[in-house]
Image (cartoon, rainbow, N blue to C red; front, top):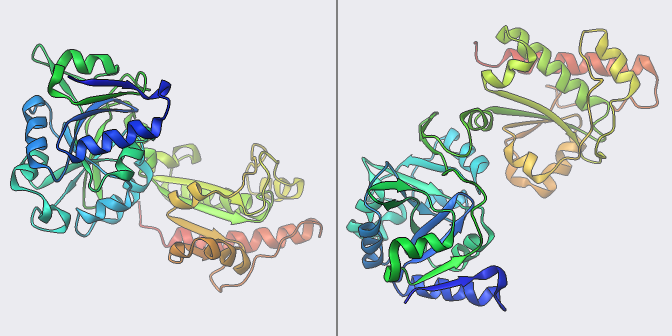
Length: 375
Protein backbone atom coordinates (compact mmCIF):
# COMPACT_ATOMS: atom_id res chain seq x y z
CA UNK A 1 0.00 0.00 0.00
CA UNK A 2 1.28 3.44 -0.91
CA UNK A 3 2.53 5.54 1.99
CA UNK A 4 1.44 9.19 1.70
CA UNK A 5 3.43 11.27 4.17
CA UNK A 6 2.85 14.98 4.70
CA UNK A 7 6.40 16.09 5.45
CA UNK A 8 5.19 19.55 6.46
CA UNK A 9 3.44 18.07 9.52
CA UNK A 10 5.82 15.20 10.24
CA UNK A 11 7.27 14.90 13.74
CA UNK A 12 10.69 14.37 12.21
CA UNK A 13 11.01 15.49 8.56
CA UNK A 14 14.51 14.00 8.47
CA UNK A 15 13.03 10.56 9.06
CA UNK A 16 10.72 11.00 6.05
CA UNK A 17 13.69 11.95 3.88
CA UNK A 18 15.74 8.98 5.10
CA UNK A 19 12.85 6.60 4.44
CA UNK A 20 12.54 8.00 0.92
CA UNK A 21 16.23 7.50 0.28
CA UNK A 22 16.10 3.91 1.58
CA UNK A 23 13.04 3.03 -0.51
CA UNK A 24 14.74 4.37 -3.63
CA UNK A 25 17.91 2.41 -2.83
CA UNK A 26 15.76 -0.72 -2.39
CA UNK A 27 14.36 -0.33 -5.89
CA UNK A 28 11.01 1.26 -5.06
CA UNK A 29 9.38 4.23 -6.77
CA UNK A 30 8.88 7.43 -4.77
CA UNK A 31 6.89 10.53 -5.73
CA UNK A 32 8.55 13.83 -4.83
CA UNK A 33 7.58 17.46 -5.26
CA UNK A 34 9.50 19.87 -7.43
CA UNK A 35 8.70 23.54 -7.83
CA UNK A 36 6.94 22.67 -11.11
CA UNK A 37 4.95 19.55 -10.28
CA UNK A 38 5.30 16.14 -8.65
CA UNK A 39 7.55 13.57 -10.30
CA UNK A 40 8.02 9.84 -10.04
CA UNK A 41 11.58 8.94 -9.08
CA UNK A 42 13.68 5.78 -9.40
CA UNK A 43 17.28 5.10 -8.42
CA UNK A 44 19.56 5.42 -11.46
CA UNK A 45 21.49 2.24 -10.65
CA UNK A 46 18.42 0.04 -10.15
CA UNK A 47 17.48 -1.05 -13.67
CA UNK A 48 14.29 -2.84 -12.57
CA UNK A 49 12.99 0.28 -10.82
CA UNK A 50 13.75 2.43 -13.87
CA UNK A 51 11.87 -0.02 -16.13
CA UNK A 52 8.84 0.08 -13.83
CA UNK A 53 8.96 3.87 -13.98
CA UNK A 54 9.10 3.63 -17.78
CA UNK A 55 6.06 1.39 -17.83
CA UNK A 56 4.13 3.98 -15.80
CA UNK A 57 5.32 6.94 -17.86
CA UNK A 58 5.35 6.05 -21.56
CA UNK A 59 6.97 8.64 -23.79
CA UNK A 60 4.37 11.30 -24.46
CA UNK A 61 6.64 14.27 -25.01
CA UNK A 62 10.39 14.54 -25.74
CA UNK A 63 12.63 14.22 -22.68
CA UNK A 64 9.76 13.86 -20.22
CA UNK A 65 12.13 11.50 -18.38
CA UNK A 66 15.19 13.26 -17.02
CA UNK A 67 18.17 12.68 -14.78
CA UNK A 68 17.86 14.63 -11.52
CA UNK A 69 21.30 15.54 -10.19
CA UNK A 70 22.61 17.40 -7.15
CA UNK A 71 24.26 20.40 -8.80
CA UNK A 72 25.39 22.02 -12.02
CA UNK A 73 28.90 20.71 -11.39
CA UNK A 74 27.70 17.09 -11.37
CA UNK A 75 26.51 17.28 -14.97
CA UNK A 76 30.12 17.07 -16.11
CA UNK A 77 30.25 13.51 -14.76
CA UNK A 78 27.86 12.57 -17.57
CA UNK A 79 28.68 15.08 -20.32
CA UNK A 80 32.13 15.11 -21.86
CA UNK A 81 33.57 18.47 -22.95
CA UNK A 82 30.66 20.63 -21.85
CA UNK A 83 30.67 23.81 -23.95
CA UNK A 84 31.22 27.27 -22.51
CA UNK A 85 27.54 28.06 -23.05
CA UNK A 86 26.53 24.78 -21.44
CA UNK A 87 28.67 25.55 -18.40
CA UNK A 88 27.18 29.03 -18.12
CA UNK A 89 23.54 28.05 -18.50
CA UNK A 90 23.68 25.07 -16.15
CA UNK A 91 25.19 27.42 -13.57
CA UNK A 92 22.51 30.06 -14.10
CA UNK A 93 19.41 27.92 -14.61
CA UNK A 94 20.05 25.56 -11.69
CA UNK A 95 18.75 24.88 -9.14
CA UNK A 96 15.40 25.80 -10.60
CA UNK A 97 12.50 24.86 -12.87
CA UNK A 98 14.44 24.38 -16.10
CA UNK A 99 15.41 21.07 -17.74
CA UNK A 100 18.47 21.10 -19.98
CA UNK A 101 19.10 18.66 -22.81
CA UNK A 102 22.76 17.96 -23.56
CA UNK A 103 24.61 15.70 -25.95
CA UNK A 104 26.12 12.68 -24.17
CA UNK A 105 28.31 9.72 -25.01
CA UNK A 106 26.63 6.56 -23.74
CA UNK A 107 29.92 4.74 -23.20
CA UNK A 108 31.66 7.59 -21.40
CA UNK A 109 31.48 9.26 -18.03
CA UNK A 110 29.31 7.72 -15.35
CA UNK A 111 26.86 6.41 -17.95
CA UNK A 112 29.30 3.48 -18.24
CA UNK A 113 28.02 2.25 -14.87
CA UNK A 114 24.37 2.35 -16.00
CA UNK A 115 22.52 -0.53 -17.60
CA UNK A 116 21.77 -0.35 -21.31
CA UNK A 117 18.02 -0.43 -20.55
CA UNK A 118 18.35 2.59 -18.29
CA UNK A 119 20.41 4.45 -20.85
CA UNK A 120 17.70 3.76 -23.43
CA UNK A 121 15.08 5.14 -21.05
CA UNK A 122 17.00 8.40 -20.68
CA UNK A 123 18.94 8.97 -23.90
CA UNK A 124 17.36 9.87 -27.22
CA UNK A 125 19.62 10.37 -30.26
CA UNK A 126 22.65 10.79 -27.97
CA UNK A 127 20.90 13.47 -25.95
CA UNK A 128 19.79 13.39 -22.34
CA UNK A 129 17.67 15.72 -20.22
CA UNK A 130 19.03 16.88 -16.85
CA UNK A 131 17.39 18.68 -13.95
CA UNK A 132 18.50 20.19 -10.61
CA UNK A 133 15.28 20.80 -8.63
CA UNK A 134 15.14 23.70 -6.20
CA UNK A 135 12.72 22.06 -3.77
CA UNK A 136 14.49 21.67 -0.41
CA UNK A 137 13.14 18.19 0.32
CA UNK A 138 14.06 16.91 -3.14
CA UNK A 139 17.54 18.39 -2.84
CA UNK A 140 18.06 16.66 0.51
CA UNK A 141 16.94 13.32 -0.94
CA UNK A 142 19.44 13.78 -3.77
CA UNK A 143 22.18 14.75 -1.34
CA UNK A 144 21.75 11.55 0.64
CA UNK A 145 21.31 9.25 -2.36
CA UNK A 146 24.31 7.36 -3.67
CA UNK A 147 23.39 8.15 -7.27
CA UNK A 148 21.15 10.54 -9.21
CA UNK A 149 17.47 9.78 -9.74
CA UNK A 150 15.61 9.08 -12.95
CA UNK A 151 12.43 11.15 -12.85
CA UNK A 152 9.24 11.10 -14.90
CA UNK A 153 8.13 14.71 -15.05
CA UNK A 154 4.76 14.18 -16.72
CA UNK A 155 1.97 11.74 -16.12
CA UNK A 156 -0.75 10.18 -18.24
CA UNK A 157 -4.45 10.23 -17.49
CA UNK A 158 -7.10 9.28 -20.08
CA UNK A 159 -4.40 9.30 -22.78
CA UNK A 160 -3.49 12.87 -21.90
CA UNK A 161 -0.08 14.03 -20.71
CA UNK A 162 -0.17 16.38 -17.77
CA UNK A 163 1.79 17.68 -14.81
CA UNK A 164 0.63 16.90 -11.28
CA UNK A 165 0.52 19.69 -8.69
CA UNK A 166 -1.03 17.78 -5.78
CA UNK A 167 0.35 14.74 -3.98
CA UNK A 168 -3.10 13.16 -3.84
CA UNK A 169 -3.25 13.02 -7.64
CA UNK A 170 -0.27 10.64 -7.65
CA UNK A 171 -2.18 7.98 -5.74
CA UNK A 172 -5.22 8.49 -7.97
CA UNK A 173 -3.06 7.86 -11.04
CA UNK A 174 -0.82 5.03 -9.87
CA UNK A 175 -2.34 3.43 -6.80
CA UNK A 176 0.05 0.95 -5.18
CA UNK A 177 2.65 1.13 -7.97
CA UNK A 178 4.35 3.92 -6.00
CA UNK A 179 5.79 2.95 -2.63
CA UNK A 180 5.74 6.41 -1.09
CA UNK A 181 4.42 9.89 -1.87
CA UNK A 182 6.15 12.71 -0.01
CA UNK A 183 3.51 15.41 0.28
CA UNK A 184 5.17 18.82 0.37
CA UNK A 185 2.06 20.77 -0.55
CA UNK A 186 0.98 22.04 -3.97
CA UNK A 187 3.82 22.75 -6.38
CA UNK A 188 4.76 26.40 -6.56
CA UNK A 189 4.02 26.75 -10.27
CA UNK A 190 1.12 25.55 -12.37
CA UNK A 191 3.21 25.07 -15.49
CA UNK A 192 5.94 22.51 -16.22
CA UNK A 193 9.63 23.27 -16.41
CA UNK A 194 10.70 24.40 -19.88
CA UNK A 195 13.11 22.15 -21.73
CA UNK A 196 16.16 23.89 -23.20
CA UNK A 197 18.50 22.12 -25.60
CA UNK A 198 22.14 23.22 -25.78
CA UNK A 199 24.26 22.27 -28.76
CA UNK A 200 27.81 23.67 -28.68
CA UNK A 201 27.39 27.45 -28.30
CA UNK A 202 23.71 27.62 -29.27
CA UNK A 203 20.54 27.03 -27.31
CA UNK A 204 16.86 26.70 -28.09
CA UNK A 205 13.72 26.13 -26.08
CA UNK A 206 12.21 22.88 -27.34
CA UNK A 207 9.27 22.99 -24.95
CA UNK A 208 7.86 26.11 -23.23
CA UNK A 209 7.14 26.23 -19.54
CA UNK A 210 6.99 28.35 -16.44
CA UNK A 211 10.19 30.26 -17.31
CA UNK A 212 9.48 32.23 -20.48
CA UNK A 213 11.87 32.60 -23.39
CA UNK A 214 12.62 36.23 -22.55
CA UNK A 215 13.95 35.22 -19.15
CA UNK A 216 15.81 32.25 -20.61
CA UNK A 217 17.41 34.61 -23.13
CA UNK A 218 18.45 37.08 -20.44
CA UNK A 219 20.11 34.29 -18.51
CA UNK A 220 22.01 33.30 -21.66
CA UNK A 221 23.47 36.79 -22.03
CA UNK A 222 27.11 37.75 -21.56
CA UNK A 223 27.24 39.42 -18.15
CA UNK A 224 29.75 42.21 -17.55
CA UNK A 225 30.24 43.22 -13.92
CA UNK A 226 32.22 46.28 -12.74
CA UNK A 227 33.38 46.37 -9.13
CA UNK A 228 34.74 49.08 -6.85
CA UNK A 229 34.43 49.72 -3.09
CA UNK A 230 31.16 51.53 -2.47
CA UNK A 231 29.46 51.29 -5.90
CA UNK A 232 28.77 55.02 -5.90
CA UNK A 233 31.64 56.48 -7.97
CA UNK A 234 33.95 54.38 -10.12
CA UNK A 235 31.95 51.25 -10.93
CA UNK A 236 28.75 53.18 -11.82
CA UNK A 237 30.78 55.34 -14.22
CA UNK A 238 32.36 52.22 -15.72
CA UNK A 239 28.94 50.59 -16.11
CA UNK A 240 27.55 53.76 -17.70
CA UNK A 241 30.43 54.09 -20.17
CA UNK A 242 30.28 50.40 -21.09
CA UNK A 243 26.56 50.68 -21.84
CA UNK A 244 27.08 53.80 -23.92
CA UNK A 245 30.01 52.53 -26.00
CA UNK A 246 28.55 49.06 -26.45
CA UNK A 247 25.19 50.40 -27.64
CA UNK A 248 27.04 52.64 -30.12
CA UNK A 249 28.98 49.64 -31.41
CA UNK A 250 25.83 47.56 -31.76
CA UNK A 251 23.82 50.50 -33.13
CA UNK A 252 21.03 50.00 -30.62
CA UNK A 253 19.52 51.73 -27.61
CA UNK A 254 21.00 50.95 -24.22
CA UNK A 255 17.68 49.44 -23.15
CA UNK A 256 17.99 46.95 -26.03
CA UNK A 257 21.41 45.57 -25.03
CA UNK A 258 19.81 42.52 -23.43
CA UNK A 259 18.14 41.71 -26.74
CA UNK A 260 21.62 41.63 -28.26
CA UNK A 261 22.88 39.25 -25.58
CA UNK A 262 24.51 41.59 -23.06
CA UNK A 263 23.80 42.37 -19.41
CA UNK A 264 25.84 45.11 -17.74
CA UNK A 265 25.89 45.80 -14.03
CA UNK A 266 28.07 46.98 -11.14
CA UNK A 267 28.57 46.38 -7.42
CA UNK A 268 30.82 47.25 -4.50
CA UNK A 269 32.89 45.17 -2.11
CA UNK A 270 31.76 47.34 0.82
CA UNK A 271 28.60 48.82 -0.64
CA UNK A 272 25.32 49.46 1.11
CA UNK A 273 22.00 48.79 -0.55
CA UNK A 274 20.33 51.64 -2.37
CA UNK A 275 22.79 54.54 -2.15
CA UNK A 276 22.77 57.03 -5.02
CA UNK A 277 25.75 57.69 -7.23
CA UNK A 278 27.88 60.52 -5.86
CA UNK A 279 26.89 64.01 -7.11
CA UNK A 280 30.30 64.41 -8.76
CA UNK A 281 29.90 61.11 -10.64
CA UNK A 282 26.46 62.12 -11.81
CA UNK A 283 27.83 65.48 -12.95
CA UNK A 284 30.83 64.25 -14.95
CA UNK A 285 28.81 61.43 -16.52
CA UNK A 286 26.06 63.84 -17.56
CA UNK A 287 28.59 65.79 -19.62
CA UNK A 288 28.72 62.73 -21.90
CA UNK A 289 24.95 62.03 -21.87
CA UNK A 290 25.32 59.21 -19.35
CA UNK A 291 22.52 59.34 -16.79
CA UNK A 292 23.40 57.98 -13.33
CA UNK A 293 20.46 59.56 -11.48
CA UNK A 294 18.63 56.24 -11.13
CA UNK A 295 21.68 54.28 -9.94
CA UNK A 296 21.34 52.44 -6.62
CA UNK A 297 24.36 50.82 -5.04
CA UNK A 298 24.46 47.17 -4.11
CA UNK A 299 26.98 44.89 -2.42
CA UNK A 300 28.83 42.21 -4.35
CA UNK A 301 27.36 38.75 -3.74
CA UNK A 302 28.35 35.18 -4.51
CA UNK A 303 25.41 34.91 -6.87
CA UNK A 304 26.64 37.91 -8.85
CA UNK A 305 30.12 36.40 -9.03
CA UNK A 306 28.69 33.07 -10.16
CA UNK A 307 26.65 34.62 -12.94
CA UNK A 308 29.20 37.08 -14.32
CA UNK A 309 31.18 36.13 -17.40
CA UNK A 310 33.56 39.11 -17.14
CA UNK A 311 34.41 40.93 -13.92
CA UNK A 312 36.45 44.14 -13.96
CA UNK A 313 37.76 45.69 -10.76
CA UNK A 314 38.98 49.24 -10.30
CA UNK A 315 42.12 48.24 -8.39
CA UNK A 316 44.45 45.30 -7.86
CA UNK A 317 43.29 45.27 -4.25
CA UNK A 318 39.70 44.72 -5.32
CA UNK A 319 40.74 41.82 -7.54
CA UNK A 320 42.85 40.26 -4.78
CA UNK A 321 39.95 40.56 -2.34
CA UNK A 322 37.64 38.66 -4.68
CA UNK A 323 40.19 35.98 -5.47
CA UNK A 324 40.99 35.47 -1.80
CA UNK A 325 37.52 33.98 -1.36
CA UNK A 326 36.91 32.81 -4.93
CA UNK A 327 40.23 31.62 -6.40
CA UNK A 328 38.23 29.71 -9.02
CA UNK A 329 37.48 33.05 -10.71
CA UNK A 330 41.10 33.87 -11.57
CA UNK A 331 40.35 33.75 -15.31
CA UNK A 332 37.18 35.81 -14.94
CA UNK A 333 38.34 38.73 -12.78
CA UNK A 334 40.59 41.40 -14.32
CA UNK A 335 41.75 44.85 -13.35
CA UNK A 336 39.96 47.39 -15.55
CA UNK A 337 43.05 49.30 -16.63
CA UNK A 338 44.90 47.47 -19.43
CA UNK A 339 48.27 48.30 -17.82
CA UNK A 340 47.20 46.55 -14.62
CA UNK A 341 47.28 49.77 -12.64
CA UNK A 342 44.64 51.13 -10.29
CA UNK A 343 41.85 53.59 -10.94
CA UNK A 344 42.17 55.69 -7.75
CA UNK A 345 39.10 56.49 -5.67
CA UNK A 346 38.19 60.14 -6.37
CA UNK A 347 35.87 60.57 -3.42
CA UNK A 348 36.73 63.65 -1.37
CA UNK A 349 39.21 65.08 -3.91
CA UNK A 350 36.95 67.40 -5.88
CA UNK A 351 35.46 67.53 -9.35
CA UNK A 352 38.78 67.64 -11.23
CA UNK A 353 39.83 64.32 -9.73
CA UNK A 354 36.47 62.83 -10.74
CA UNK A 355 37.08 63.98 -14.30
CA UNK A 356 40.54 62.40 -14.31
CA UNK A 357 39.03 59.18 -12.97
CA UNK A 358 36.24 59.25 -15.55
CA UNK A 359 38.74 59.76 -18.38
CA UNK A 360 40.79 56.72 -17.34
CA UNK A 361 37.65 54.61 -16.99
CA UNK A 362 36.41 55.66 -20.44
CA UNK A 363 39.73 54.79 -22.12
CA UNK A 364 39.85 51.40 -20.43
CA UNK A 365 36.24 50.54 -21.21
CA UNK A 366 36.66 51.57 -24.86
CA UNK A 367 39.47 49.03 -25.25
CA UNK A 368 37.22 46.27 -23.90
CA UNK A 369 34.35 47.18 -26.21
CA UNK A 370 36.65 47.44 -29.24
CA UNK A 371 37.76 43.85 -28.70
CA UNK A 372 34.21 42.46 -28.76
CA UNK A 373 33.00 40.59 -31.86
CA UNK A 374 31.63 42.80 -34.61
CA UNK A 375 27.83 42.96 -34.75
